[in-house]
Image (tube, rainbow, N blue to C red; front, side, top):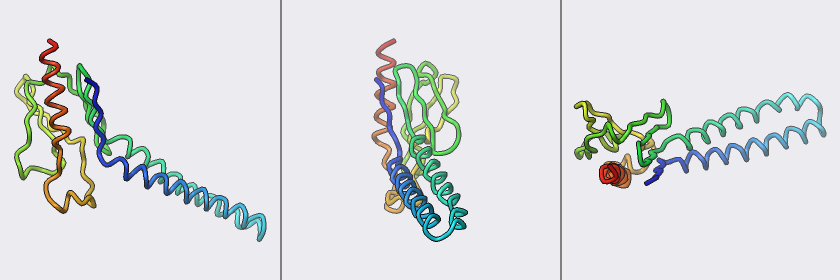
Length: 156
């Protein structure tokens, strides 16, 4: 069972493409104006670099936030921070958070040693409508985690 669930990466991808388009248009405008008016306009050729850097950051952020479930483990990663991995052999049970818990919390993995690992890969943007309208819906990720753990247990 290989499943990948992404969180709001489409918005970052869209913004990345918008910034790329604006950077290309600005670059063309600066080159044309520099050739027609004066060479001093070419100083502004470095301004599109900022737009391209912003586009790159948005592409990177949009591709990071995910929850990957494989037959042997699962990996979760938010927009920032390092990716974290847990092997199914270390997991005792996947717990669903209680209503009213933090909106970023998708699930909690209870480990065999008695400790807990909070799974927060499915980050909600502060400007997301789900943040304002109520509790975030992580049912798809929760069901995928439970199904992945169940498949591992049946495979053993």
